[in-house]
Image 1: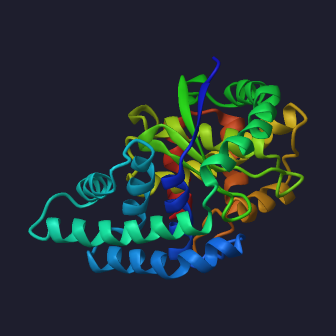
Image 2: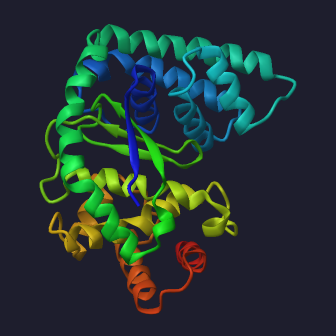
Length: 294
């Protein structure tokens, strides 16, 4: 089944992508952006903490909804409601976070005044690479797992390469966010493979796959479950290698969080081997992976 991609450029998603990275103390590769956004982004992060919002869940909602909502206050309202609901401090929380978001937005505009013109130019090489190799890669992935993992369509939100390469799957919004780099940051891991990895995470929020998994744990599990799967598919189409070394490279380059004391690459490799040997329903395999991470 072919997956229809809708390529979109979004300055606000770019802004929040960089701000969220700063909030996690991830250094930006773009010094212009780092200098302009450090203070505003940290103030936005402080506002989120002061509101006692679940931090990871709120950022996930805020960035995921941004592509569909240009009104900054309405965006913050929707993200707060989906994360925490309406409470006695709702209006004040929304007012404070909207002011902080506007400051971050203004900082990015000052640092990257030509962003709206640059992103469309960055789309072409990524799109050409995808159209040449992506469909075959996804077909191979479906052979190794389940065809139901391929969505009918999804949005690809191209953002400024603030980190020098990065991306995230927004399962609840059927979209993926991808830094529009002009060259592969890691030669052994083409951006086409990263994009495919993001896309095949999207369907995992369907109850048939993840009904028994807590929603807050699912994004983490989706990243690791699809990592050996996509590298194995990429090796089959001669686009990348599936080895312990490339697994470790991907965990580092694609910034997968590893719980303390756990080798995420080795654990995912062990899980994938068992899955390929026994081929249980994917929902059963995901539940097992959840237990392995503890």
